[in-house]
Image 1 (cartoon, helix red, strand yellow):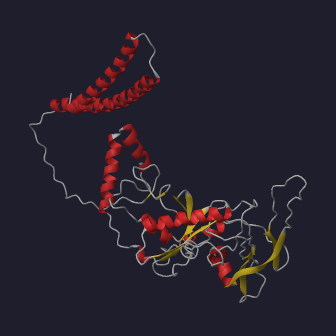
Image 2: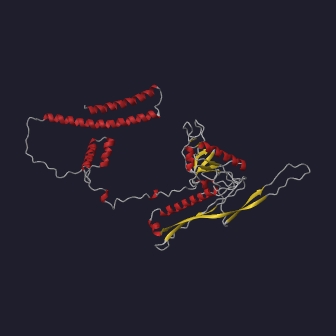
Length: 451
């Protein structure tokens, strides 16, 4: 018995011993075999079945080899027969797998890998050698009209814009169907009460208001695109419309931010002027702005609005021990000025300062002056929103495919937004109010939403 056949028998014996050991252990413990043991026994049985097939094949080869050797021993090899033969010439040799061949590459691949067929393995090996000898002289460059470049139109990169982080968090009200001026009543003199003694008159103070006029303003843009571009292009209509809508939202947000950051007489403004500003000095200013809102409006701010660069300035600050003053997660080993919820996100950044969410908006101006930070008029703003309106409608006209061949299709994006600030009491910084909330507030007002 050759060594290969002996190795097969040894492997089969080992796997059979494992099955016997599993069954004996279950019998000794007076139990049925578990699901895991059942799966192991089944897997070992399949392996034994494959080994039996291999052993049968190799045994058959050994038997034939022994029979051939016995037959050769009967032949007298002392006499040598000499023949005259002509030189052999190979004129044409078929490839292993050719159209007229009875062999199949897929059938041989299955037989070689699964059934362990040695003849199939030999044909596969010969085929691989034939493929190595084959030479290819023509590359893709010779087929310029067939190997064409592919444009990933679904991955077209849009024009980058700052978007509308601020407009998404401010309060929104529906715009009336008609009229270019909206009037809102604002109470300027409130009722009064006083302790009333027996027989004396009750305190009477007449309430008074004033009318606030709010102008309706329009934000609009358009693109003229040829009919051929629409009919022969790929995704041009959706790309152009998406760009128009993106430009509209960014402009709306820009206007809202610009109007919100305008100085208002009597507003609470906390200035921080320093040629070399630090976060340690900025933090008390922010808390001062918070208390001014609470003192004037008797309510807290909703959020802090700042430019992404200003938040990066805060996140980059470290203390004397080189530990960050703003950390990505709360409950850390050090006292942090600001904490976050992981990585920084544009818009609702995920970070808070003094418990107030930080909203970042790149539409905030950064040219207010070197070393100057105001809690209303520069790149950091705290606000409490109360009343006020901001709404928008946008529409577009569809392409006119019935126009002449050289005509142009027009898209337009038009938004009508009311931008006006109303102040009833000294105003202070901005806070977050859910965009879906239409709940009236009893505190002072703000409006004018930025882009």
